[in-house]
Amino acid sequence: MASTRQRTATGRGRAAPAGGKSAGAVRLKRAYEPPEAADGYRVLVDRLWPRGVRKDALAIDAWLKELGPSDELRRWFGHDASRWEGFASRYRDELRRQPAAGLADELVDRARRGTITLVYGARDELHNQAVVLRDAIEQRLRRPRARGHRPRRGLASPRQMPASDG
Image (cartoon, rainbow, N blue to C red; front, side, top):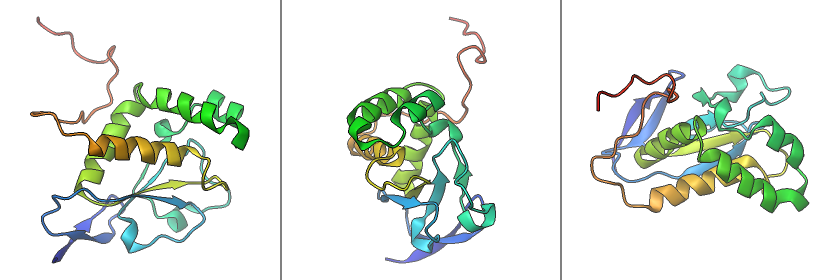
């Protein structure tokens, strides 16, 4: 399969499959691991910047702070594996509400076009929000797309949206 070069938000060129029709992979990577061209679109999904990591070293295309778990949930979990099931359930609930739901839609759309890598800072590679987010994105990728469905481009709240005439 031929590949073409694609520009990302950081201006780096990345290889993308020609046609771009097949859904790409959703990868996970710790912020402390070096970036690779195979990572595709790299997005930091933590509310807090990873300790000791320079912006240029992280090489992300986007930082979607609002996709991270709420401060309250993050503090409650405290990376305690015994609270994992409760954390995952509560975080999935947060992902269903705006603005996280709209941002997740954008990542699903990007994943339909190619590989995305969810970058996170947690030490535990099995019990962190990126694992829950990846599973949510992959679940949505398996669903058939609704006809005429277009992901929202803005993140306007209902209060910011213009009143309808109908």
